[in-house]
Image (cartoon, rainbow, N blue to C red; front, top):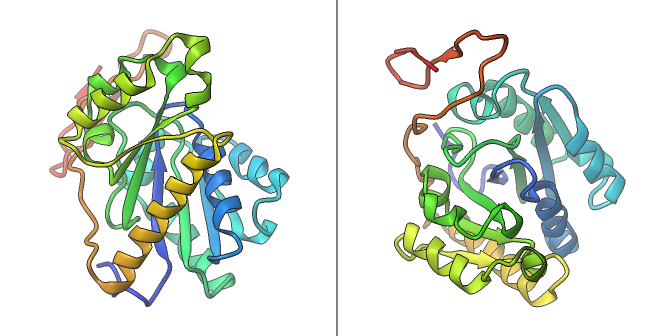
Length: 245
């Protein structure tokens, strides 16, 4: 069970496909808010601590406030199916660096079905980018549809990849029934101001007890390429039912 607001840091999950700019977005949040909030970060990679090393090298936070989890499996497993490793990392971070106001938990890069368990985070942010294609927002999925905020990232690159940002944002808003969508570039200060304001707004709701963590629902059916001609069999159902691809 989640603790009462005010007892611990607010936990914000950041998910999205590979290459959409999750680590860069976290660095942007840290730069924008480091003078106002006490922030910690837990990153997820399958076999490395690459994202944590990137953030330390950027100097966005004291190095001890950036921790890494090597999931050793599909990225969503450690943020949805069995959150133990991440939960322990977050709790250790909060204990070692107390007091913290905000802990950002970065998922490993996954597909459009990735969602965080509400047992791990209080809210979640899903990241797409214009380089992934202007039509990707229309494809939906739990991450796009039910995250607390959807970010369309790297909008300064849109002219180079022939994407209509306004159209992509409109498609995203439609897929989310009007829930918030933010068009963002770390190089456009006005968009960073919007992101910063959203984080402050959500943190205030959490501290006042107005925010309830949303369970985005179970993972949608999805595919991981097989290896060596073997089927990939795994389960996400609460009853333990397995399925193969």
